[in-house]
Image (cartoon, rainbow, N blue to C red):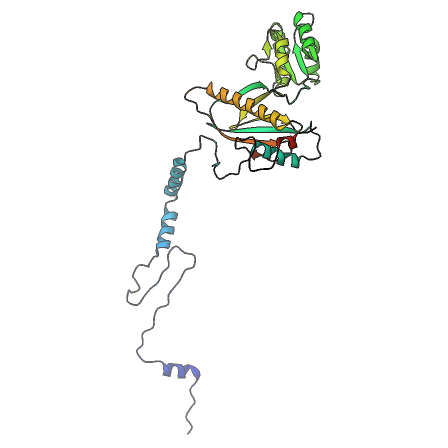
Length: 321
């Protein structure tokens, strides 16, 4: 009688060794804070093994308020800056005045010499919340001489006649008030005589002229007894004010010679240094950087020299006929 042929399941059971213990499967939970691994030697009831990363993740998830306190403490420790950021000028490239003028004129080539202005920027070492420098200056070589000056004073007074003779374009009271209220502001500077101050304040011109910087005030020296004397200073004069630690002012036209620009720059620097010296001893302001630019050209830091001896640029070559 033929013996039956065993099936595959029977053959597999016959090949397995008798008495071999089966190892328990290792359950792994993905993206879990703990990884459970069971070994035969530890037993099924042993606690799961945790890695350092899993412990840190568990601690962060278990106490989020404590972590927020730590982050807030770190932010509190960072004190805000009280001064403006400064750059080390030792590694920066600086130029002599004639070299800077040469590059600026090359960039402004083909433009009207009277329309382009040389601009000076003085960067100061100053506190953010400290007092600012603000003043008016008349340069030896005026940059803008076509100012339209308005004088508010009684039209029949001697001050009105003197103001017209000094070069004022508008003189009067009621006519100027009505023109300003109608939006016709045809002047660049405004001066008020002390006798007309109360009438000007009653007219309510502050909300119109104030945002434009044209409102007369005794602090700025535009409310005076004799307007004629102030007009002579205004023609060719300019105001400068410190903003974010920088003072900017136009110091010349493109047609100016290097000597004229140098004289204007020196006058401007002396005036700013004088303003800094008049501040309180507790307030320290220092001149950190001097930059010359123009209407369309970038800024060129100056090293304080008029002409570089190694350069072949001559001041007469930069003069416009």
